[in-house]
Image (cartoon, rainbow over all chains, first blue to last red; front, side, top):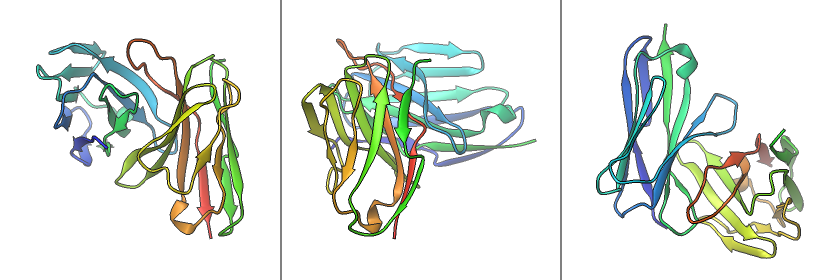
Length: 110
Length: 114
């Protein structure tokens, strides 16, 4: 099936620093979604991006969808301990089979 | 409260013993899906259903069955479990329209096959 690649797999961040996780697809996406999974928990929907070049913000989180609708990024500013977890992107190739990236697991040093 | 309920949360079974993991949602969502989560592989789709009596294979359907007799329920059946099906399983549901909306996930079922 079609795949979404996500990097990095791990991100170790000093509290207060920024970081970015990236998703890439070789084919155009209908839309892309982002989820967060806390340790021991289940994935929780964060946001959906649909339009080319779209940028959305949720407090310290900034989500972008590329102009070609083949890539996306999640940027977190001023990382806090509450940001710990695994962040997944999930691409919709317009076939109702949402394809998840492998995830970026974030740990925070206080 | 809007939710997806999976049972059981934890299950240890032996190779070859049929089992069913139940999933129920109370949001009247058309779309339901099963995923398995393995370290380094993210979430891989097993089966999905776009409505009652409509099911289709995801990326890793081998060894699994599903049914969708009612809109709210979407059980996952392992007819003859094997150790390579040891994994964390999630059921998820979503409304669908002209595009795919965000999933609501269940709390997960951790399955160990020995």
